[in-house]
Length: 191
Image 1 (cartoon, rainbow, N blue to C red):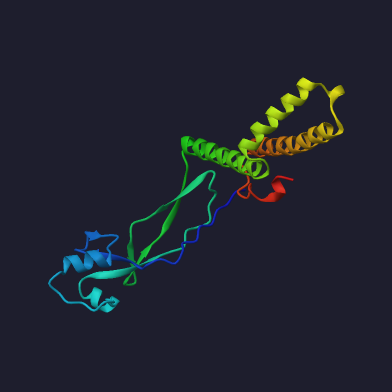
Image 2: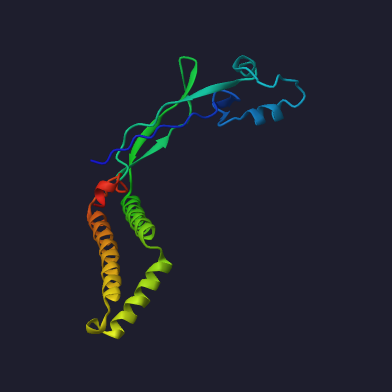
């Protein structure tokens, strides 16, 4: 089963401005706070205590839950107050069939992009074109008329092309898996 755990990077604290019991502004930034109170001189860093005197409170965002990214998505709920502290919780909802299809198509595109990245790292597109042109020149000469140097060149071209074909085979195999492994870019899937 494909499970995803998202951890939020350390970010600035989020705040909520309470207008009344039913109305609030979220998210509410320091910039908004200063703009809304333009006639007040605040220190460069405004403490939570000062903000609280203006009905502005910090909001704790709980870590997002573990979920199956192929079939589910998480939805951030509206801030809620619990024991005089504002929290944001998450809920897990099932994806629609369209969302599941879109997710699968996105994963297939990512696998194809990884295959292309790997191929280009071995033989850039300009070199691929040169290889094809050179191979055509060799074929026009005919195998029986090749010099040893030309046989060696042909063998080198074939070895590179076999590597490219193997990457394509691995890409096709990954694309056929449902769900595609989240770690599809790991080298173990490509050897």
